[in-house]
Image 1: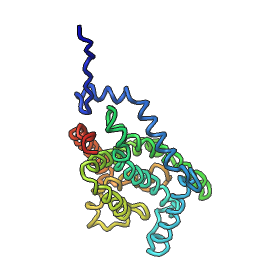
Image 2: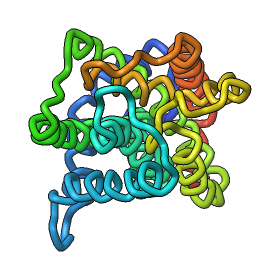
Image 3: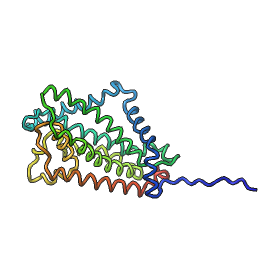
Image 4: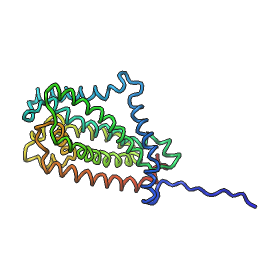
Length: 277
């Protein structure tokens, strides 16, 4: 009589139906990874969580000085320049910080990925959740600044969740693609800071999209963060002009396409992560 044990096969690539069911089954792991990212980010720092507030305020001061005082960029009618910059800086900071974290997330969790099975896409998604926590805190910065300038949102504030969803789609689509590529090609980690740095200057963070010449506007609107940044300003600042239809449709279209492509690419190479990481 043989005492044979049942054979257990653990695989990273499962059928689509089982895979998406696993995302729900492992939701507690998602919460754990996101909370760990938030705690580790500010552990043993000098001012701790206050960096969530300090960073956008410093960036707001620098961008206002460079683009408004030195370059002479104009503010939107009735909207103070510093407030305009901060309203555009918050979604950009969410995008850039989450992109950097998600791009390196799989390599940073190599020990977990190589030992146990779970849907690997939860790792870059957890960086998005952690980024949303920081983003929610930084949004509170606008309240005292709005009170100072006497500038308050109107009915467009109701559209803010839709704009946040578009921004999350763009961020997650790019992030999961970079995370998968970084496992295969480790020099991708050097490309990510370049994307963030270059993107700051081709996104209307320190200036209005209306400052871009009409001849270059179509090319400028191909950047999916243009519609997101201008959309956030429109939702948060009463009287700020709405984003152009081209920029808004570009953000939605590119966001959906990038998310679909990112998920498809991630699923195609996911079963190789444990071998090469």
